[in-house]
Amino acid sequence: MTTAAPRPTPAHELSGTAPTASASTDVNFQGLPIPRGPVKAVLSFYKAPEDGSKPHNYVEPLPGVPQRNFGESLHDVTLGDLRGQEQKFSLDNNAFDTVQNVPSEEYEFQDDDQIKRVYYPEVEKLLLESVPGANRVLLFDHTIRRSHTGANRAPVTRVHVDQTPSSAAQRVKFHLPEEADKLLQGRYRIINVWRPLNGPVMAHPLAVADSSTVRDEDLIPVEHRYPDRTGETAQVNYNPAQKWFYFSGMKNEDRLLLKCFDSDEALGLWGRAPHTAFVDPRTPEGAVGRESIEVRALVFG
Image (cartoon, rainbow, N blue to C red; front, side):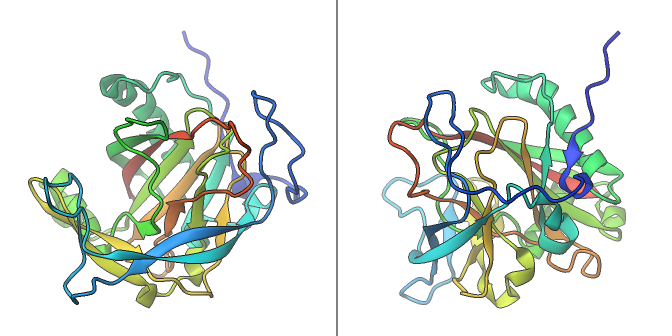
């Protein structure tokens, strides 16, 4: 007989207002100071192809072919620290949310089959408990990112959104073809569940924009070319009105929920959260490279 794990704590259920995190006052296991508080950092935004062609990106680069045909535009951005003010944000209002104190029985994150067997049910349970209205969850893939040389996938340092309205509907049709017509008539969302594997995060933390400050015109659809099909993601134009945040010193028990699409434009008006890894200029020398996993989910209801 197993004992029920303690319920995770969604940000909106945190009582009171914790003091906003300030300068580094705590350290990681190496004894290095963990960067806290607001920070100014350089983020990489979209720059249109010089020849005026439609932007595209190859998921698996082809020999002798550039991976993408668009460039980057670098801008200094001030990021607020979510730590201490987590309860101010929600999936419906801002397209992201935080959850703390989430237990897990998966520690290795080396074997995909084990991840699906052990970690996927935990993520499904978390989403059903944390996402208002959710009654069904389908996890359709995951990506592990590691900062060390030779890693299969490194942190992505370009501002982007994983889905567009077109690609979100295609996801439902692709993964649930027999039920798609009915499911597309109800509310469906695509939500990424992001967490570190070797927290607290000190190098390449994840930045996320408050979606209510992002205009539709800021988002540029980009063909996301797989070997067997073509999807669509969104790159993001810089706009000084955008408000950016990060969750300082994320621990392995912390989760960041990123909404990439919401079919309900009334409840989920701001249904997309631009995000990117970034270089924190305060990262101390010798800090371990960030390792993380993001699981992508279709959430119905």
